[in-house]
Image (cartoon, rainbow, N blue to C red):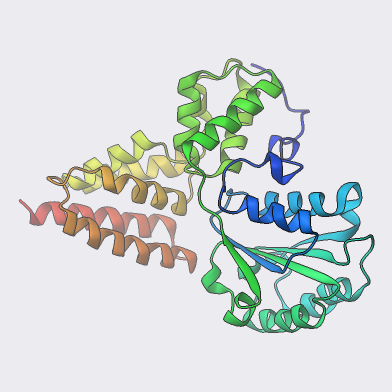
Amino acid sequence: MVERSGEAIWVEKHRPSSLREMLGQEAIVPLLRSYAEKRSMPHLLFAGPPGTGKTTAAIALARDLFGEGWKMSFLELNASDERGIDTVRTTIKQYARTAPLGEVGFKILFLDEADNLTSEAQASLRRLMERYSGSCRFILSCNYSSRIIEPIQSRCAVFRFRAYGPEAIRALLQRIAAAEGVTVAPEAVETIVAASAGDLRRATNLLQLAATHADPVTAETVREYATVPLRREVEGMLAAALQGRFVDARTRLYAIFTERGAAGEEILRAIHSYLPEIDDAVLPPREKVRLVEFLGEIEFRLAQGASDRIQLEAVLAHLAAGADRGR
């Protein structure tokens, strides 16, 4: 076993310090770089799934804008921790109203997970964005832009971050492995790519976890420590359901929950990503369309706090019932 417990978290250690170092998001990074070069920017709204570089982009933009003293002109808050109107009226207002330092002429307030703010807090935030736009620029980050009120969206340049492609994740893993002096087997890289599902942060954390326990890192090491459902496990679970073997499929689902510690949203995303590859003879295109609609409903229920296990069982029951009807 390789002990690396005293090391820094690799996600932070290898976070790009400049927009020039960012991988992927080719449609977004050049525009942000132009803001840094011109030292001028509007309010920004970063929307997209977790692990797609929203926070990294905000920090890198601040570094490029303000230089070494960037922390004096940049404040990061998380709306999940402070989501009420009092936070907007006190912490955010107090920061926005103070005079900026340096030559740029404004400072940046980065509000992560802004879609967790209450509607009342968002309305108050919108007024602050208007009132203090001369001294403070706001960067709002969210997973779901639909949860941000329209008056705020209309006052921001909206950037939609997409899940990273396999090439970008491979490049990052190879860069980190070389910097850390860790040997990673090609099969292990592909296993991490599959397990991360486009989430760069998850891929980095999984590499560090595997490297903590083994060097070289093998595919088996990754499978042992992965906390997300692996493709072969999801394939086996769906295959059982599509054959009408609901009890077997449910047993496989429980194994993913207990052995992998996966969350319902992660399993749901894995099912969704695998759907296009299911043979049309097994699941006709029309049934795939209906299933995607059903998965959307399940995702909404999970977001509202429904039970992971019951909702995923409902998906498997839906598939198994369809298999029985087709016999």
